[in-house]
Length: 77
Ligand SMILES: [Ca+2]
Ligand SMILES: [Ca+2]
Image 1 (cartoon, rainbow, N blue to C red):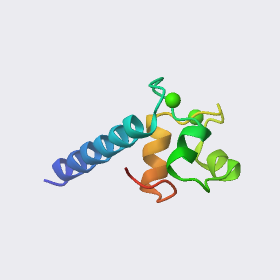
Image 2: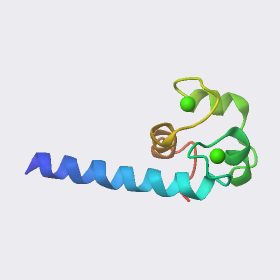
Image 3: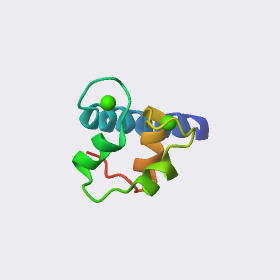
Image 4: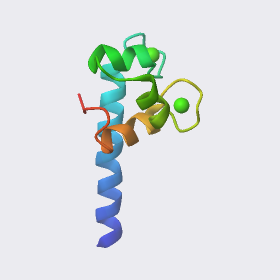
C-alpha cells in the first residue's frame, strides 16, 4: 500500500517536471537555460540558477528543473 503511494507520488512529480520542462524549453533542446527560466521568472538570478543546477553544467535537465519546481524556486507552469 505504502509503496503504491510512493510510486504514484513519483509519477505525479515526474509528470509535473516534464510538463514544466516542455513549457519552459522554448528552443526544444530538452534542457532549460538561464534565459529560458528568465523568460518565465523575470527576476531569476544567476545565483538562483547555480543553486538549482546541481551538476553545474549551466543547463537545467528535467530532474534539476523538477527539483527546483518542487522546492518552489521555479513556479510550475
Ligand atoms: Ca532549451
Ligand atoms: Ca544541470
